[in-house]
Length: 637
Image 1 (cartoon, one colour):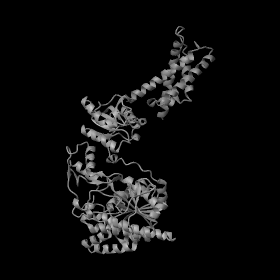
Image 2: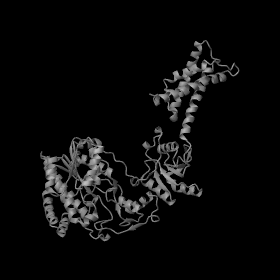
Image 3: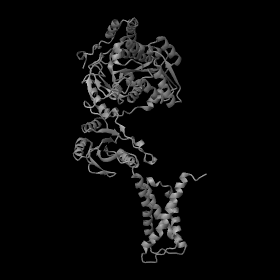
Image 4: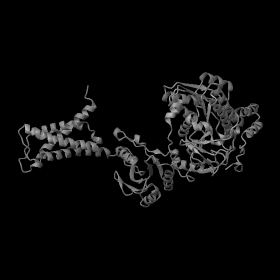
């Protein structure tokens, strides 16, 4: 059995340090007394090595990693050298030999410091600047001159196969212009990216790409960089995450990543009450409807991470349900799960399933959400979104659930589509149930709280505009936008679900929010023009809008409107004490009255009577301005 590799490295370090320490003795002797006899007894050289090895033990000299020698390592070398120089005269004294001069210990220490430090520094420089396997293929300009740039440059220096040559950096501010990082000049501030690129083009030194190294460069600043790069025909990439640039691993391979469309939204991270979420979910029986969808599956992931007693995944689609169940089995094997195939419109199935599972908390994400599909199948949309929500809510109430969280949409505000109006009707019924529950609880009884959460589009969700644009880009375009003025609110699915859980905590525990009993509305920030989103996605693909990839306008589809709203005129927004959450207080009705109206709607739907069903929907949701033909004149701006 051979010597372990770690021990071999320690023995090698000790041997090299001892050899250098032995050489230091005659060198120091010659420097301290150049006119004296240059002969130094051979026995003194080994004792010089012993003195250093003993003195280096407290400073862990033999276990230093030469390849990564830093300031702390060199300080240890200096301390060990001074200690060895002080210890060596003791050895000489025991041998009845006096130092050649009083200055010998000081000179000895200096010689040791130089002899031990120079090889370490040299070895590190050799490793950081290796002979490249291939010549640099492309010049790049780094955007950012902070810690991210420092890590990127270190990793790039250690990667023999990296095909990039850094020609300069742009800093967040202009004060750093002219300074250098690892020998690379800071050419200007990020707000000067256009002039800097123009100057480099004039000097025939234009880089092939720009690489963003700092994570906080996003939103408008990142969009400005991309626009300037687009004018010069350059692509913009992101450097790998700092955790991926691990110089200590010795295996750092620098791979650039494309800029994500989420980076251009620049939505600030909202602090979430994770402890409150854990109190809400941990040890509870939780049911998620629509668990195979974009929102439902992310709800399932985040709920599973909070440690429920039982997580029931309900969906009407087998494949989507299998996917999320398999994923959770791998990510959270300790969470007891149950996958249920069921239709939220099936009253008997919902009641029997709820009675069997007896969930404490229900997240209702099941819905038909695509406006054109629901316009083409209005009765199905009403049966699923409005009547299906009532079915789930009634079954959960009967089973003794403590709370139900309903996922709604900004399309429910001043709806122009059947989908939006059906979701508004679902909001109305759940609000009516919540009023009844609060009254029952106030009288000392029991009731199921209904927390309704309304938000806009989710980036990357199934059927949303981003995947559509990606497919169109893969085919070579064109990218289709319905109208040049079309705007939508966007947020990421993870952010949306995190705020849904936050609203669930607030809506079931915050006394003021419970008393108000309104609809929670996620702060969606500013709406984004869809045509601008299309142009940005073309740039992210390294192409030029309207040159490489055309953009065509197809006209509004039935049910669409130009601008989505998150509040209508009769429900002014109310701020909450929690960032990212607003509250709307829409008109409410008695649960029995809404229930009777829904019964009439159900009869029309089951009879296949589209006209009477839509007429009933218009009576229940008077602000419903149906844009059935997709005309701009029918759209409320």
